[in-house]
Image (tube, rainbow, N blue to C red; front, side, top):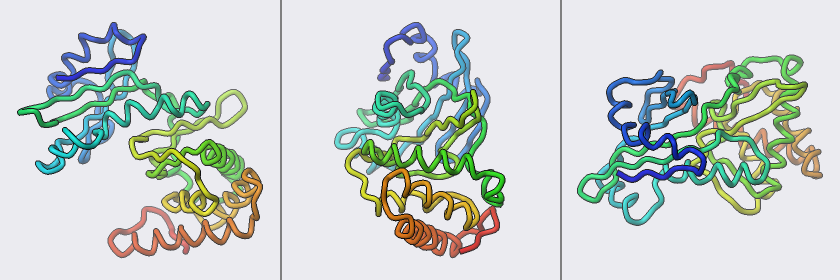
Length: 248
């Protein structure tokens, strides 16, 4: 078993060594079950978020064992890039990797548990009058991310945690193993909002503030944001029923 620990958390070595067994035995509070499983666990008085990545298919086990960086390892590495540039994301604590026959099995990403409890799902059917301030703050945050050459490829409602703290909105980005680092054009930036939930007015406000923050034409941003939103959801509703009142 391979364990990588962020400096300052070496005292959690015993917990991390036992993590696969404790995770399987049911320790902690499960907050998500799917292909991957997420639990909130406690060690030495520290509240931790532990994500266990599923065992890949045999072909992908070979790929991730020898040719590509595993998702859990990327999830452990990328937060430091965001934190160094002044963006909030849960602080990484450790990466744990199991192998059998030289091939990757389960892997675990351990981070501090984010204290923010709100997610962007709540804006699916919200009136813009009820969320204008947070939408504007989020648009400015995203513009800063893009100007800093950071692009979250899974910019969906569940991966944006936020809360109102000390008179302003704070945002924390999670599930960031799928990131791109490099110049982000305005066109590509507009496409980044496609998967968000919200009524049309939500995106009109978003476009105005994003354009203003990046110093570009608001009409252009509005047209492109609505275009990418429409394209994504047109395909989505062919396979799934949306969980909010979708207006395209």
